[in-house]
Image (cartoon, rainbow, N blue to C red):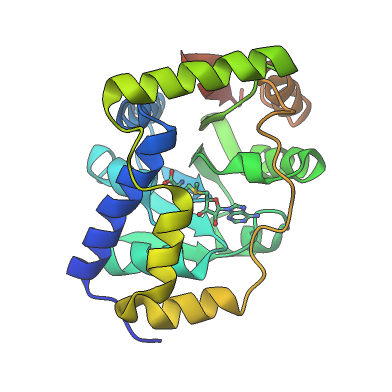
Length: 253
Ligand SMILES: C[S@@+](CC[C@H](N)C(=O)[O-])C[C@H]1O[C@@H](n2cnc3c(N)ncnc32)[C@H](O)[C@@H]1O
């Protein structure tokens, strides 16, 4: 497959960030807090292994790299176009795995012990039974003291409050000046037709990606916490929140 240049990938990545900020105005702060948690939790681990679940174009893995220069960082995603951008831009020792998190196929490709699993804006794509299975798998791989840190929309679990959360999100976007940023559909339309991404777009087209329903409005933070405890994590709590946007942290004892 034709390699996208690092410069072209960088341009698409920055455009991706702008597009994502339309929906998550505090996305950079969320990344920073998430990195703070992982860095602190792994301070005493000599050679940590960190998985980024649903890494997309490497947004979080790429920001973790300078914070954890000694870590093995592995990004997992099933979208060939986004993974292609990650591979082209982040060439500094991050491993990228093309796999569906809704299956256990990726487990054979990662070390038998991990020290952290992180994710941003991705796990809401999985239906609950697949998410529960993923949590169990991650827990089985996790070393004692390891952390699972997930930044994502986790709805309040009530139609009326969902509506209020949407208002909070829109108002926050307006205050941050990101409400008119390029939207998801426009970004994908542009990526699909960009000559430099033609081979990646073709690979994506040939694959059925994300056919599962998402759980953003059905799973609350307490329900995620319950699934994580059932999977073997003990201390579980949200450590950051803006509206329905949370960072949920779970520790394996
Ligand atoms: C909105 S993007 C977020 C990407 C990145 N984490 C970020 O914060 O910019 C959601 C990502 O989840 C990935 N994803 C969704 N369902 C998946 C699955 N079943 N297996 C692997 N990746 C999945 C998508 O391919 C996409 O890259």
